[in-house]
Length: 129
Image 1: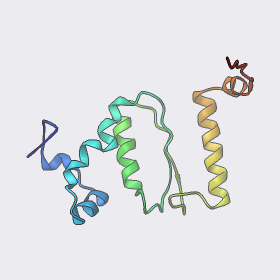
Image 2: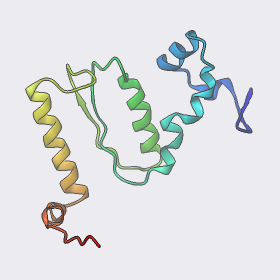
Image 3: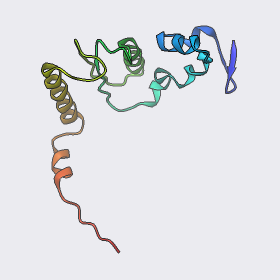
Image 4: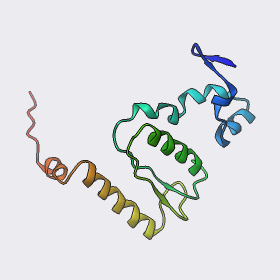
């Protein structure tokens, strides 16, 4: 057990993943990173979430996003999960781009609504004094 910012953290709570193990192998105190782990803060998110990720991403492995998704769902946060086969950290294939933007627009229309576009396109008067 260690103390981090006054909180007792056990080794089981460190949830070592590949990134943390990599940092530890380079001399970083890996357990210091765990309190900042996004899944630990899932209970603070109360809006719908749209994670869209490449299944072949080597920078942010899909397992990280799956942990976040599971943590959000555990706290009853609406998650619309979109994984893009054959994509890495970005989007390069036309079918993936099409699916990405279609899902994004569907999500925004569902959670913001079509009125959002009209409000955004209405010019706002501004006065400089």
